[in-house]
Length: 397
Image (cartoon, rainbow, N blue to C red; front, top):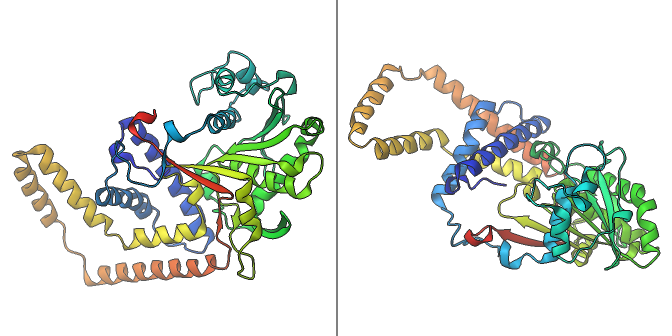
């Protein structure tokens, strides 16, 4: 999530700062990969939070009166949406084999919702069968082979395949949706994220023996997941409908924080019919300013441009001085005098130092521009399906 942390409690602020750190790590990996090697890590580490702070000052966000586009989580988040979010969170449960099963059918408390998942699902009309439960064994992911579990609601005749996402935002940003492959989806050609496409095909194939018996009895098939699990679920539903037969042709997906998975355009620049087709059976939820659905190569270089052109050092110094005056009151004058004395003791930069700094800045700018040219050779891929935007408001807790 792009951290809106200057209007939130300390714990949320610390959580947001963790995300900033992870984001920086991912940005640095991608910057290096794209040939931008001289952007100072220390500058980026300081500039990104300062840049966000600057945005906060320009556009303060009132959580009691949200002005951004979005829906109230409490009033516009359907029981089915909530149930899929609960199932998606269960995929992250760690521990010995069977931990997820205990969470769904035993007394285990789901730490993501601080409640028992099984009871919460029943309250939302989802009645799962313990005998139908199956999961990837061992429950360990590998490249292109994400963890998943399947379970059926025999009363409502639905079988769910739940895909686990990644635990690290840095992992998501490390490839930034750049590597793509051309595939056939929904009767058309589509450009999709290569790694997530591999994951989708793996989930379909490895879950087939558990899912097929229910589809043969007329059950509906629903894929769900969060983050990379969301992207996998969306493409799995698309591939399932493409292959058809035995109930797969009616597959749907309900996902959360889906990353970029499909290009809106074909390689010849025409609109992608496959991308449009996903809107009929894939729904993805985007909460607030979540960074995952927005992470792309194009976004990285836009962000770099914004950060680089932002006078974060000068603005940060000014904000610190203003805050000091506000907090110290009468003592601010003495502090200001001390700071002036300290500043005067530091010799001004020499002409050679200024010239070297200007040359470094020019080199960074040139490399960022070169990186943008490289990134434009790749398709700009987006989250698939119908997007539902949500924002937090005061009464949505």
